[in-house]
View 1 (spheres, rainbow, N blue to C red):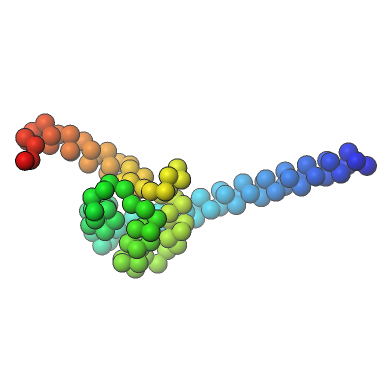
View 2 (cartoon, helix red, strand yellow):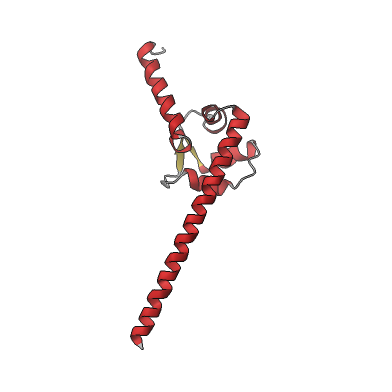
Length: 126
């Protein structure tokens, strides 16, 4: 009987683990939907993601934003999605801040390439 209880206990933990995995997968899908909605909102308001990043999100030029800054930005543009799920989609490494790379890796790479090109073509500003 003791083995049955143990087996039953393992089964319950396995079921819970399976439920948690399904919940996490569902949450990831929902978070990615919020990310797509947010990117569309940035495109609508600013024309492209980099301009939205610079004018709405990273206004201080620190190259990163916090959860509070993201939530404030969502309110400013009246983003009607779930900001908490949006944060979950963006801060996938749980660092507590996000960069343009996490929002749009291709745009971040293009901007980095442009900055590199510019540094080779133009003398540094004084």
